[in-house]
Amino acid sequence: MKTWLTITGMTILFIACKSKTVTYTVQARTLNEAVYASGEIMPEAYYFLKANSADLLLKVLVKEGDTVRQNQVLAVLGTPGQLEQVDILQRQVALAGANTQENSAPLTELKKRIALAQTQQEQDAVNANRYTELAQSKAVSEKEAEQARIQAATSATQYKTLQDQYYTMQNDLSAKLLQARQQLTATAQEREGKVLKSPVSGRVYKVYLKPGELAQLNDPVVMVGQPGSFKLELLVDERDISKIHSGQQVYFETDVYKDKQFAATINKIIPLLQKESRSFQVEAAVQDTALFYPQSSVEANIVIREHVTALVVPANYLLKGDSVYLQQGQAIQKTAIVAGIRNGDWIEVKSGLKAGDIIALKEAP
Image (cartoon, rainbow, N blue to C red):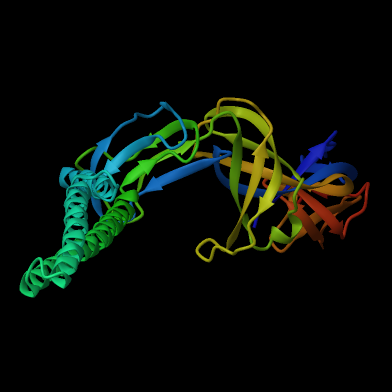
């Protein structure tokens, strides 16, 4: 846990005694209290496109720094044969769909046969009726009339059979279309994780692998994000997280811009302890518009108290066990204090000293 102390308007009074003991006069000063956090700077919206299974990287269609549009294909995993399989299934679906149309070749041919069978059935029915009437008047024999009726029945059966074949063919063709679609869907779902598309319009920040290299499960292949706005992803010690809330001011530095300070504002606290580091992740929206570089490391101070009046002493005056050498006239004695906020330079004194007390850097000889 690191809690930082910022002194504003500080004047330090040092007294050189005859013994050359360096001293400091304790005074009440205005200070800001801040919690230290470290992390990295990232685009406000970014995505790691990953492999959903161990696979070879077939091709990369972009390079770092490229501007891309939403749903643009950035990289493809797998083998050329797997891509061809999708194309084949797509053609099979198209063919099966065409065969189910009323004007398709198989159905058109069968409809022609049905039309001919209908005509033949109608003709044979008329002929059977005529022969039956002629047989009643003894113009033809009963045997001839019976043959005509049998022919009419045969034609009717043939006509009905062809109609049934038509409906069966329609069902079969529809079933083949459904099967082809199911195969295409299953293959496309399998391929979906292998064709990596950009979820946003933005910029390619990183390409992690080269064509032909093996991408393991959940390995990042491409990082893409929206440029222009950035955020901090910080880790805050679990002992300090209760002090953090949205809206707090953050001041941070990054090695990319040495000795320059930037500002951000806390806008998200993820309430899940990271067991490895015993820390919580906190996000802050960067207020500056500088050109930042994703994944650059940052060190930050999250301000939790501003313009607080308190007693402070230089950190190098504090002895082990939170005590100081208090000077009273010519005498110097070791005095315990209750220390508050501290960093490498300053210590807040909660009790044990009062304003005007003089403390020594070292014991007089």
